[in-house]
Image (cartoon, rainbow, N blue to C red):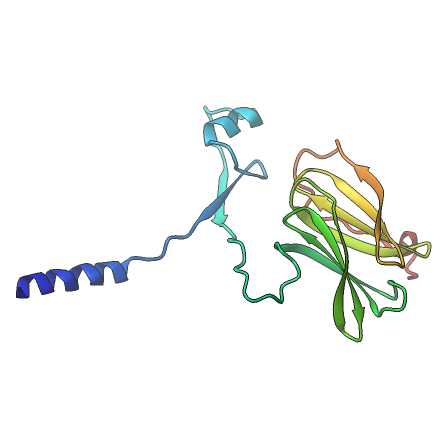
Length: 187
């Protein structure tokens, strides 16, 4: 019996010595690897006779939902706050999610209230920018689906499609900026 107890102690100490597993994501040619490596190499037109650069990094796991207070059902990939828009509010917070949805939240006295959401992309939104241009609030989003979409934010809290720019990008749009009033420095 004593020998069995010692064996149990050894196995539990081995389990404690193991590091937790960490899931990884991989980048090939600046794109997330979502195909078998051989298929992705062919798709990218890479030569298998030379070195292929593959970057890896810890994968981001989805957040665990706790309680009922969460308004946003998916990761926020980017956000932008614009002062003085939103029909009587302090301003509006715009978010772009991993689900491809743009959401707006009106701020009244520092309290955010959800005002609208619109599915803007087929892939995760990677960047968002908003600015007042000619007394209108424009919101631009860039996505992993390789498109740039702009919306006009209305005083009633709704978003109207302004334009969709596609076909000019071969990879994820990861950053961009709107300049207020054409970039003349006046807002």
